[in-house]
Length: 305
Image (cartoon, one colour):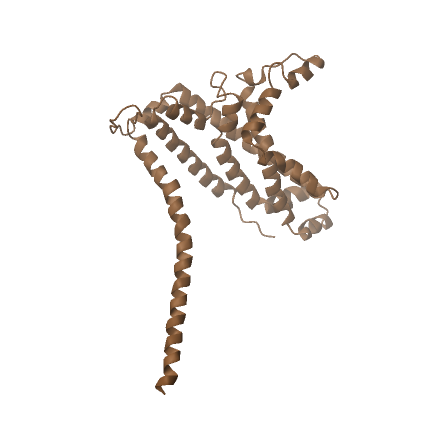
């Protein structure tokens, strides 16, 4: 009798050990990226809050506490205010333009039947191309004696300053950013369009709705989750405008294209004012958080049919 009970007890103990090992493996796999995320993301963010309330000069050993002094200095700095205004323009013009063009291309691509994959690859290709390379190609095209001005002169139109103009440059930078991100937006909207059941539009067509009415009252409401995602991602992207601005205009002329992130870079790594740079980073962090929450609250509506 005793001999019969022993294997059962050993089997239960072995089963419990395997279960413990499985859970240890699962939590271990979850813990490693969590530690990495906290170390690389959370701690630097918290540390930047500490820097933002100190007079943090890289060339000085003293880092005195100044409270909100850095923030006061920022909002009294005309260059920072110009960068803030420019960033608002980047978002206000870039995000709607990117969404409208991305949705339009997605609608057109959804309706073609031949070479569908080829067209999708062509439109998506700029998104995976080096941002620096794209920026320098457009910089060359838009030179005073570049390709575009050559065409304009041939047509009898005076040559334009383009990136050398304080009024034109920012919109050209936005256009380059929209062009490069168009493939990503197209892909997101295509996925959303293909997930909409055809029976809804068919029912609307039977009820007498024309193409525009079906788009406004059926397609757009059902695309709402995709639109919310695209708006939030696009807003964050344009708020963080840096690489295109740096390579196309360096923030000029006359700071007319200077973005908030490029100004933070200049403050920290050119003027060594890490306290002011950290304070500007906190302002950017607050703007991204606030806009994301507001957009998700206002745009995220549950649609049922």
